[in-house]
Length: 141
Length: 32
Image (tube, rainbow over all chains, first blue to last red; front, side, top):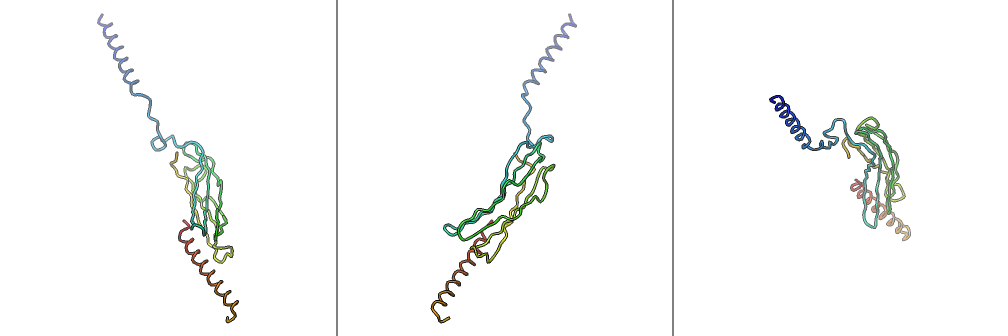
């Protein structure tokens, strides 16, 4: 009789412990900052631009767009999707070179630099270079 | 330079040069 009582008490204790564990709810969803094995997974596009305009006189915009994919926070593919100039009025602009300056596939980050040559009027008296930088951050999502 | 046509041309080129220079400075300072 005593052994049976001990057994029942033990079963009740185990049942209570199981209920308590179940009551704690599902584990908290962890982002890239708190899950060492996690990080962003998916594909994105990032853009950087410089612009200037004076109404009815000129408008100029230099744009760089980079597309990339990450798996668990690590870049698996990355490329320059677009590099262009939009302009109107008394300025002209021409995108020249754009390249990756750091990071990339296998890293969690990447940096890019893009150049464009712009000038006032079509006479091209003064040629100027605009330098655009773009950074793919380690933490995104 | 006393020729009126020549004088008009010089003034036109001068004004144009000033406009270009001002635009050059404005765009340089604001193209960010």
